[in-house]
Length: 122
Ligand SMILES: [Cu+2]
Image (cartoon, rainbow, N blue to C red; front, side, top):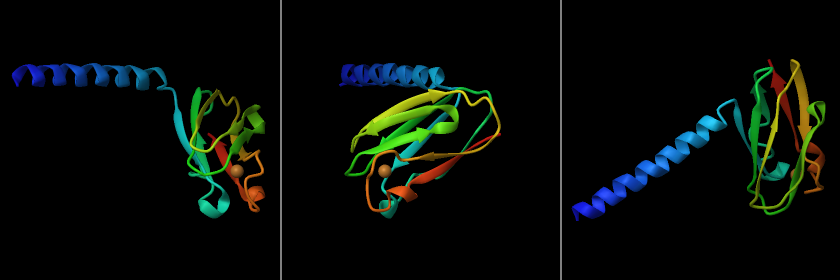
């Protein structure tokens, strides 16, 4: 019993250490973005604020039943197709302040054109 507990504790320790190292490595600035067609919730959040000059890691999770795409033209970054249930990670460093649109690039529903959001760099 004690041996089991010791094994369990050391396993948890290793996992925690890996997770810790992982979050440290992408510590610059991480944004989690959920993709859904407008009638099912749209981008979540629709407004993202990041600091200028910092590397941004964006994790885009498509929790929908259809494919979506992501484009942030101002900084020339995109994830052309994110299939249902998939996650794409993109990285970029915004070098100027302002508010810039991002949008879905896959025709995902009749409301596809409303699948937009804004990135504010400050
Ligand atoms: Cu879409």
